[in-house]
Length: 134
Image (cartoon, rainbow, N blue to C red; front, side, top):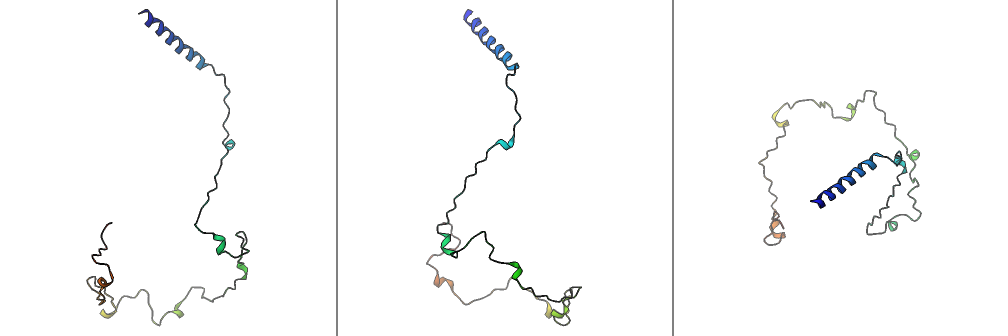
């Protein structure tokens, strides 16, 4: 029992000492500057499997503009101020007109079948199944 009391006293003494030293602050707190972090960026090497320089002109420079926008000749097309394009449409065209007769209605039947008279089985391997999962 004496051994237990001594070991318990030592553990409590060490805990109290830790608490006493934890209260005293001996270090100065410095403000953190995020700009002080150095960021190292690794350069990625992308391999395309072929040399791209073989497909470019001999004196190619990616930083040089080879096209000058000022050399483009623009065609000034005269359009009405209202944007009237009626002269380009058929005579009597009305975009909002409803069909006037049955012949002007285009009806597509979902049950229509198209026969091509072409047998694809002649050109496919035996026991071919397009929906088979491998």
